[in-house]
Length: 194
Image (tube, rainbow, N blue to C red):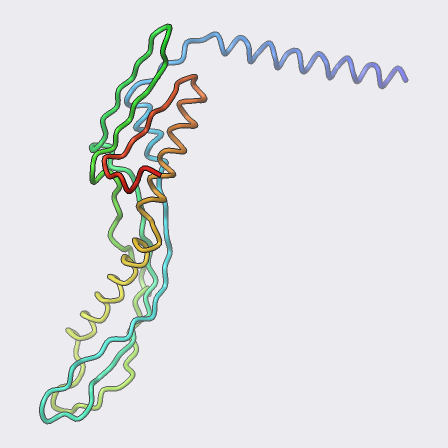
């Protein structure tokens, strides 16, 4: 029984020490500046990894009787992020009001080019029946570009821009509220104000 009481006293002392330490550190002034907001906003990224199999046909020319075809298997990475140069940040830090207003201008949400790792593009010839006009490197390159374009279109169709905007709002709001500030975050592109 004395061991249980001793353990409870030790636990109470530890909790008291933790509470004292937290109270001492909360008394230090919190400084929010534009740089700290921009550093946190860089965490607002959405990353997609998308794979596609994209057929591509080469139109037949006279005297050919059939189109040539190949399929490109592609896997790529695409990222949505925030361009902080397209941001207006106002900080109101008075005794009555602790507020940060952030306005993202049009173009503040940036979708990266598709990143393809080595081996991420794999063309497969399905049919190449035309001896006068066979598939060549230019045809393969056009098919690969079509597959890369399809990856970016899929990410945009899935809402990478709006998901990045939501992520930016969430991260910045939580960061500022944790420091005792109210956050008003707005996107000039109204379709992103979710």
